[in-house]
Image 1 (cartoon, helix red, strand yellow):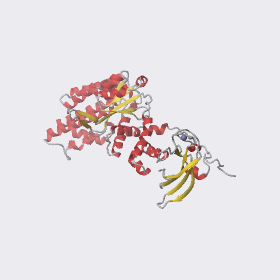
Image 2 (cartoon, helix red, strand yellow):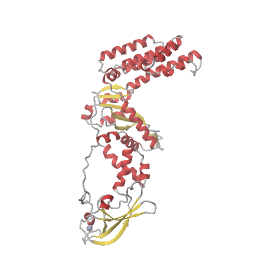
Image 3 (cartoon, helix red, strand yellow):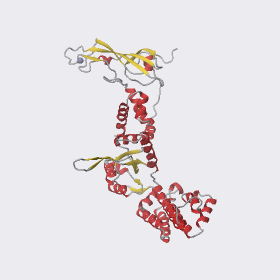
Image 4 (cartoon, helix red, strand yellow):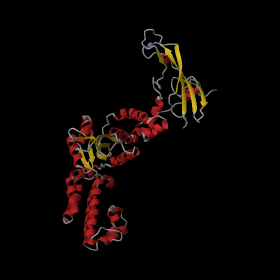
Amino acid sequence: MFEDTASALFGVEGLQVTGVEAAPDGGIEVWVATDCAAARTCPECGTVSDRVHETVVTRPRDVRRAGDAVDLRWVKLRRKCANGECPRKTFTEWVPDLPPRCRITARLREQAAGEVAGRGITPAEAARHAGISWPTAHEAFAAAADPVLDQDPAPVAYLGIDEHRRGRARFAVDEQTGEYTVLADQWHTCFFDLDGQQGLLGQVEGRTADDAAYWLAGATPAWQDAVQVVCIDLCSIYASAVRRMLPRAILTVDLFHVVQLAVKAVGDVRRRVVRARYGRRGRSGDPEYGIKGLLVRNLEHLTGAQFEKIITTLDRDRYGQEIAAAWIGKEKLRDVLNLRARITGSVPCQRQVRDRLFAFYDWCAQHDDIPELVTLARTVSRWEDELTAAVITGVTNATSESLNRLAKLEARLAYGFRNPRNQRRRVRIACTRGYRRRSRTATTRQAQSVTGQKLHPG
Ligand SMILES: [Zn+2]
């Protein structure tokens, strides 16, 4: 409770405002005195002392007032300890917001930390705004972020695993043995909550099966059991880690990457055929070049005229027909993926998926003179179980891809990170920001007096 309105407005518990002056630079000078019973207690022996040794004026940094600098002048007393046997002869007053030897108010630290965690600006920018140094802003942020990040993630039903290129690798060479040790790996393996809103669950350095398994092994058995589906890119390394650590979970592949493979196969065929036909790479003016953008589009998104253009272009000769075969192969693979409940409205059964997969394989077998189609069919058959599971469950890695974008943005804002631990902390905070915002319980505000005076006189 504050004694007067000015102190209540200033709002640091234990400090009483004694005067406010306009500073020459446009800010304000706030003079305060200590108004706190605990400040009279010796920190060493706990004796309450009223014997004043001297008066000192300190100038701790404080938050700005509407953008203007606040020059805080705290007139505090150095007291003599009343206990004659106390090893501490004198002590200065302190309040919880400004502990002994602290030159920055706790609320200024909190503000800097909150700006980095909540608004996504860099510690350097937060430090500049608060008028403190980078290390101070960084330490405040780390102190606020680490307890949040150290909490074990809540159970997730759908887990996503993806790699993220964190920056250039750094090595150290042992001069005696000539051996290299990795100081910072080029890659981070990231774990995502695909179903709920926890965002990025955690990261480990490196992208080997052991790296991924290491993180999964750190989870509690209950957490591991709760994972029903794990979605990965077409990456056999993570598949082996998941099979080792979460044997009961259903493994699925991200369907976007499957389509991407098929689209790439069509492009490869087109480029090879055009080179065979013209003896050079394709260029504007070639009929095949004119439809290259249409070939990567989904069939159902083509207009009638666009579809007609593809058919007339590719139907001219055997070169065109080769491209057409690859294009139809891509659409046959997409037919499999289009069985997803998101598109049809009902969950497909395994039989339906296998039937359409068979039609795709059959098409590829009929055109086994196109090596790109054969490679595509081989890759798909290697991931057949995971692909089928992905179509049935409808789980995609879209969340992790979108959060990867945030991770990249964070690295750009920082102009790259030298310290991988800092990077993980900043990225993780950025990728869980939405979750923290949503989970913050709405606090009910009630009109309450802070000065002990009536709010509405009369
Ligand atoms: Zn004492």
